[in-house]
Length: 226
Image 1 (cartoon, helix red, strand yellow):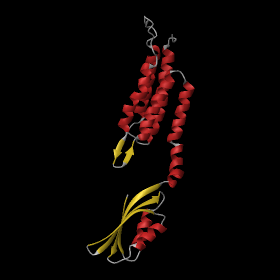
Image 2 (cartoon, rainbow, N blue to C red):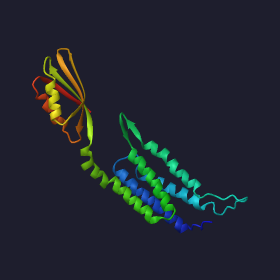
Image 3 (cartoon, rainbow, N blue to C red):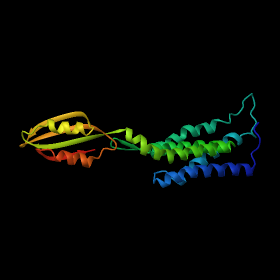
Image 4 (cartoon, rainbow, N blue to C red):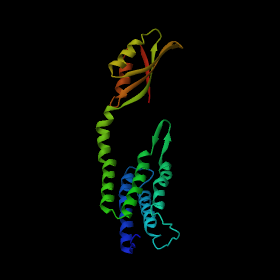
């Protein structure tokens, strides 16, 4: 049978869970995310409370006929149940998906709360520290170094005078480190239209690219659609 949990110990565990969950929430609040301080604090606190109830609330009950209680049954539902709350933070706008990091921090807050409720104070604090490092310093590193290695897609439309050589436009795009994915050339309404789908490096400057296209002889207009 598990030992009785005193008021002081219970308060300490709940307070630690609330404090650590709130620390994660403050970072989200500073980023102006959907789930902030109060949400993360309540998720961590609620997870801690469920864990304490699961581990200690049933120790005074006597079960007969060889039936024993399982202290993990209620706490285990926190792991799956937090997924519904996390799903509410994920939003899709066109082809972009937002809120995945916030959903992950909600899940992490639940884990921190459960850890604090079991008495592993140092582990809960360490996990919170690592989470904050991932959300802040690692984010700066990712933006500064990793994003430069990624590519972005662009849809470029160029208008030329009828009879102008479209190959000049394509050669310029290739010289600007653009990878051509698709090209369509058509003549309509007294003009030649070149539509290209390209992949560019993240640090490519689209204004300079468009200005370079406009400087090509025969080009009357250029448009970039992200």
